[in-house]
Length: 193
Ligand SMILES: C[S@@+](CC[C@H](N)C(=O)[O-])C[C@H]1O[C@@H](n2cnc3c(N)ncnc32)[C@H](O)[C@@H]1O
Image (cartoon, rainbow, N blue to C red):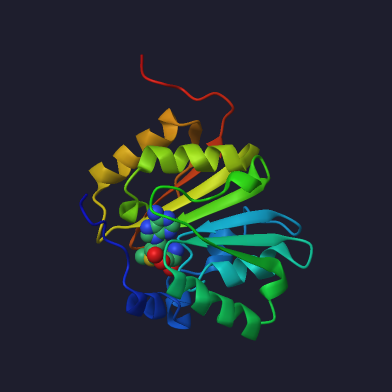
């Protein structure tokens, strides 16, 4: 079986840099969708560039489930969340390449984030189908992919996988250097005949 590329751990440190907030501000990007008390999942969270601000946004009664295939990313995120006093709101999950391991969260998630991860996932249709199961009815999934790694054509193919696996496009957001889509879970999965 072919090896699938995943983001190296050293890049994880760069991605978690506070300087990134100058052109990609988590509160500005996700603030309109995340409320106090929500249960949120950050898929491919790495060292938590988005997870820690999300933990602040959901407040003391909310929860952020942080999922990643790489243990080193998760361990670093755990240290960062402890240091920030946010570990009580964060649950970490080390998944594998073929499954996010969200079986315990069926229809429990209000909002899901997949930032710069989909181009590393081998089974994109399976990925959407798993998130569909975990989201509450009408729950939302925000997908962002880096323009430098993902062409417009490939991004639109990803969006069509989402549409075939129970999502509808709710919005397109302008974020410098990223291709993005906000998806809403619909109850019926539309399959090709
Ligand atoms: C480019 S980094 C993006 C990190 C973070 N979301 C951000 O925007 O800063 C991609 C992350 O996705 C993780 N990843 C790759 N394949 C994955 C999969 N199949 N399931 C979950 N996480 C995965 C990698 O380990 C890496 O931490």
